[in-house]
Image 1: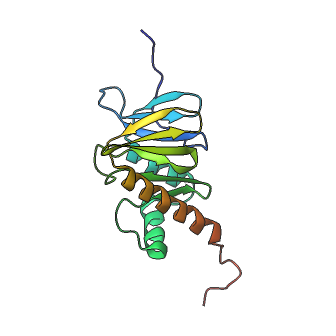
Image 2 (image 1 turned 180 degrees about the vertical axis):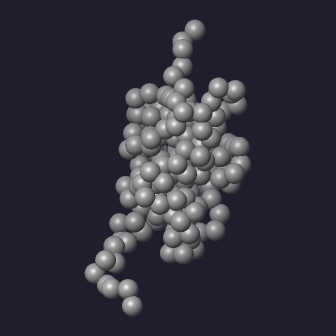
Image 3 (image 1 turned 45 degrees about the vertical axis):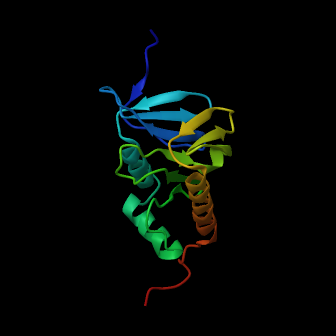
Length: 160
């Protein structure tokens, strides 16, 4: 039996492909990376929130900014870092919610009312959501990425 490394927390990197919830007493998240699979004691949502803080803003602030600019209300994609963006497959507080990192997705395929994702490393992941929802979430994530490319710091303007 292979011994699994279980991390207390996880630092999201450009190599992160997905955060999946697990039903284990030892860990709550399965992390798919380009070259490895890791397990983390935090829930997927807690990993996302923790990494937002590591990158200078809390999750709620990021979501409020995205909602303000793009008017997304549900299943809002998040900019964890200006160059790392993820989107949820379900409501973020739902156990079924998987977080996907858009830059790692090569293509998606419809399978009845399920979808299959192919990541850049040719790893596949079957999802219990329609390809329509997956495509919509991917497109919304691209809008978030574009938003963060356009936002410029306003340090040139003094506060009145």
